[in-house]
Length: 117
Length: 456
Image (cartoon, rainbow over all chains, first blue to last red; front, side):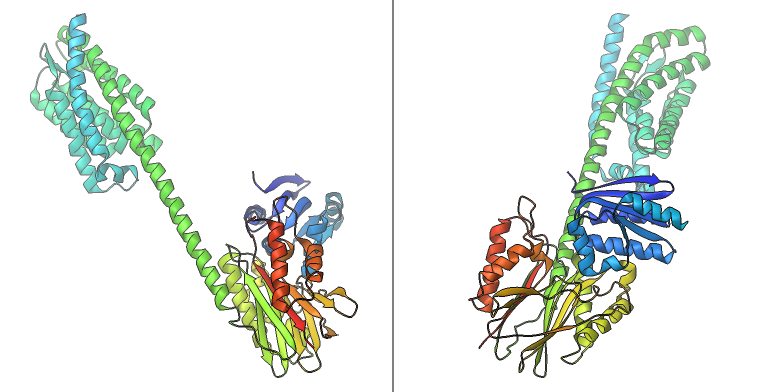
């Protein structure tokens, strides 16, 4: 059994990655492949729903940072929703929370994108 | 009629047995496996043309003369050559076979020569359509249909017609049976060889991958080791110890001691990611923090300098790489400690006077995330008996078999229970508690810690 699962969906025209499980050195490679796949399709705004992510290692945070920076470079953004306490601590301790748009829920993240455009 | 069908078939099946032995030999040869691996050379194709041509000639010679026509397993050679090795081998073998058959003469000579050539060509086309050997079932059905076609061809071209009719009546059964059976055995041998080759290829590439991974693990571990301090420095009035226990795949932890006049500067850090990239980033970060020399009371400046240099020199913003790093400068005379914390797990400070544990919180963003970040610094004064514990997430995120993390709470109690011990005693005691907690679960991340105890 894999330690992490990603379910891809579209809400409006926003690709949403719903991740569950542990994002560690091994599984972060799959997350990276999924994110790069979408970025290569010229998607500008991506949403990662982290509601079911119980663990995030520095490898996982690196993958998210790299994707965020690629999207920002194209005037896009990587939105994060529903961080659980452990994951939230990783963002706030490293200071990575300053660079991401973080929302309490997927619905609020989508709403903010719709009002932007 | 029935007896002649059986005896004719038996003679042909004897011929097939000889052909099968030859097939076994050729299927193990370099020439054949070269073609299977898609590395067909002119030489291997020529050898196979000659082989399947010879098989076909043998299938002709062994044939049984029926009213001036020869019933035989001639078509098998070009058919197999085409199906297993492509049109060049198929047509080549077919032409050799046709030339031989034509020279034998007889009223079916033309029909049989055309059939032998077509066997190689059609077999080769079937190979091309699939891009490889089309499998056992396909090949056997193909051979049967082809033999029936051969009979129709004989009826269509060979004259006198009534003689052709007699020959076909006698030959059709044995020829379909013998060529079908021959193809079944041939195809079975070939598909076995193909499966074997594939299994071997997969095994080889897995082995290679494993060796490469092993070499990478060693390189990463070597890089990390060579950038760690060789010994713990001596600072009057302080008891100091430190260790790094690397994970199987190096996590890029490091610590450093820099002596600057009467100050001892400390670094503990954890690079994002694992393996060779993490080890290289660690080496770079360690060097940069050393290069960005600052006086005792400028810890924050040290971090903003290091951050900007890492961003400029490593393209960390593109790769997403970062390093959480705690920097402190400890003055030997007044025992003041000035620190700045770039996103690193807050070190613990045990205060003997209040017998409580304080944390040295984050004062800025992890290094490498963005240029021009601002860092704050704090200052504390150490008293005799105070203990400073710097650590990486390999300790607090160590997991037991119930998937629970060791956590800061357990680390605090572990420290609180060991405050009477020496620095080394405290470190050993914490590592013992950690080992007891994880109970043999594999260590997934580097474990690094520095313990400093202020003495009398």
